[in-house]
Length: 255
Image (tube, rainbow, N blue to C red):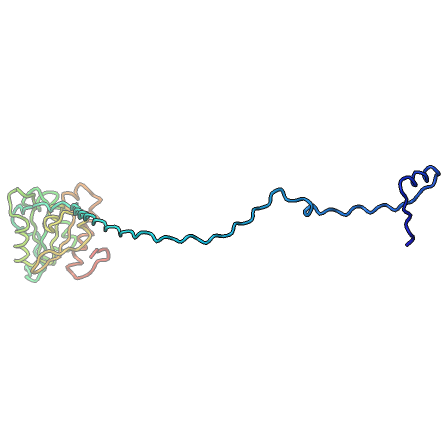
């Protein structure tokens, strides 16, 4: 590499006046200055203080255990729910048991049916209601193979034997194959129940303690004269009673 001519400023000026162009290698640009090294940070983070040993922890004074809380007073027992069903109404037999049907020859082996019917008179066989009752029992064939006794039922306070006593005597004397109660008053009093007739229907009940007898509840004949729609339900009740006497469980029985 040729030596480099080093000229000062005066020599350069003289050569320019003589028309001599002097080539001088361009000086190397100055090396970049590391800003990080030359510029000190505005603020230096302080040196972390030397950790001091923790101060000894003084033992806390013993805390007395809390006194046990006083027991809460016992809550009062809830009151018993009131009974919604009304007490069974009292009823009386308005008169004696009256014969409705007796098979030919009065066979003592014929089953006995006791029919209790709500009635304004002592003889439930009378009037249009009595004729309807007779027609229904005949349609069931009871006039051919059963002995049927009927009694009119009235409210307590009227003249007559209390129904509970009259029914107890009849059950002991005749041991009936079926007791048929026709009407709300007869059914509730016989079963000692305050349930509505609609809830007593549709099932074969049992009454009596020594020799229980089956019981079926249905509508009174006087009601059926005013409510034709219930005649079909009354016929279902009668068929249920027939099936119970024959030992057949009807398809629509609740028991």
